[in-house]
Image 1: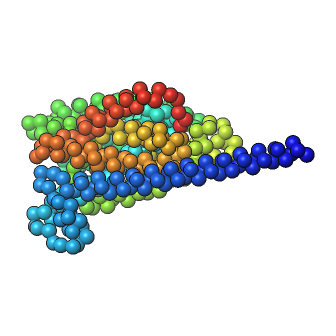
Image 2 (image 1 turned 90 degrees about the vertical axis):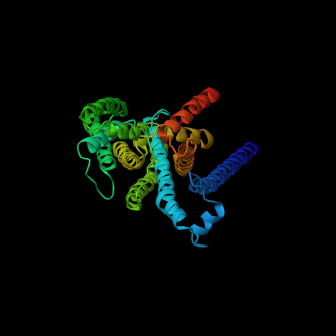
Image 3 (image 1 turned 135 degrees about the vertical axis):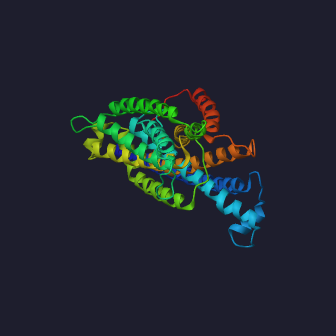
Length: 363
């Protein structure tokens, strides 16, 4: 009798401890998300106000909230240059970070990034075709480079998926290897187009700038289209995040609990490909955002993809908006390609994180 009572007390204590732990984890998640949203708001205000022509916080908020009417020059800078570029940075940063999170969970590899299955090579070739062969082409407000880069990115990932598919299944390792091979071939194919440049290297310089990653000033119609695609991708990512938690325990276990593994893999690939292609059409090939941001979020939040998803999206937006602000202000009026800046910041910081942790963590 006494042993039964002791067992019940032990079980009750364990249940209470688990409940308190769940509440603590939830509180940490909500607190971190609120802090990140607050930081994002501050970064947005600072980024919009900074540049070759500075706009004060009072004037900025007054213009955005219709408290006062800005001068004509400031109005053009604010609504036609700064706001579209900053919003583009938010979209690209969030999209690349979430795509990196999805692919890291799919491959169970913290070194996976949004370009791991060939999107960068296809985007590079597509942009090259747009610049050199179809310079007058446009679609939904997108220029030839952006439109063809989107098509090339989607096409290359579809090709990789078809090549990796064998017997109705898509082995993850085969998908990874096919992505590497296709991306490499397409990237080097881009250099064949350089010999067609008869415009004193202008198109070559534009292509080189685009390949290093640069947030241009998009039109509002471009932002509408891209925001819709990225929003669809982010919404689709939420149910996939729960399945990634199950897949982390192994494909066999996932099958046993009712997860359709191959369909889940396909859904993750399609969602990650969509938001990666949309991000590439706005910002070119920007490195390290989709690698370092999910990695940092996982170190703080743990392996739960459901909670990692919003944290990663907001943190990615903060990271890229900050990087793009530095890129256009450090050497103003000249600009540094934001991809170079993210590589210079992200590479050493990523190595620093690896040297500090020196431990295994669960995907």
